[in-house]
Image (cartoon, rainbow, N blue to C red; front, side):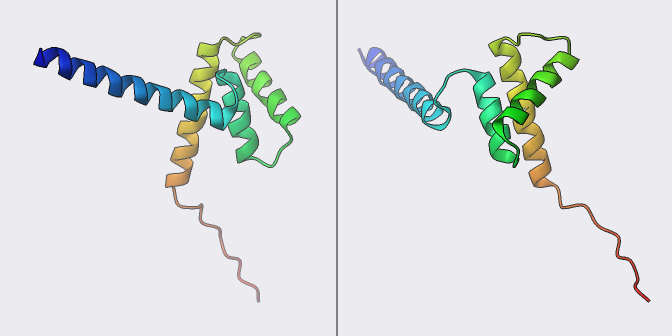
Length: 102
């Protein structure tokens, strides 16, 4: 009986965590489509209009030979974008050369 009780509690915690993750995703992106996630994140990261970002995303997929990306391909591209942003955030800014004014 104790094993069942522990299993049931663990199951409830996992269901609550999954529900929280689903809710957080919906609140942030208003969608469960990874292609929309990528577009919204890229628009937020840049000062470009959504139309330009969408065109850049489609062009990047076309360069890889993908005309209609699947959710799996969009999810992978979104992960890559997030990873590159995280790497860039951890690096110090590039040094600029100071020119001597004489």
